[in-house]
Image (cartoon, rainbow, N blue to C red; front, top):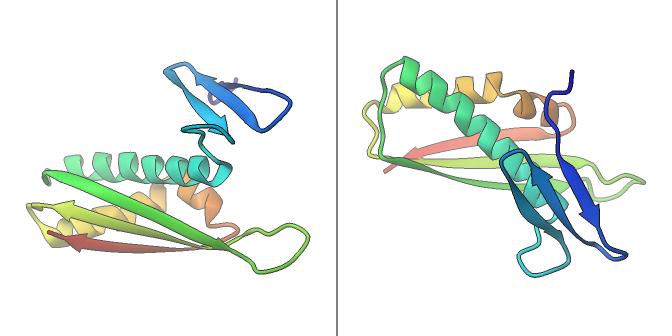
Length: 131
């Protein structure tokens, strides 16, 4: 049984569209086209956040909003330039309990399956700040 299912169509260039059960996005070299690492970092961020959120809610912690900035770098050379480092910068606004939310973020990283997958090839740094 498939975990999920998407469909991607490209033209003769690098312009395409991805369709999932819940929507579609523009891909490639066109206006508003998502590039491969945009998609990878977006998947990492949304998986991490959803895992963090489940943990924070179970611990009855609250906040107004969270922003995530995810960046990365590749190894400088090689036939396949794999990711080398990824940094997740998380800002939690109006936290009810900074220590509890910090721990929830750490568990979010630990139990996010996409984080676990990416961490097999890259060192992932998590930086959490509160405002």
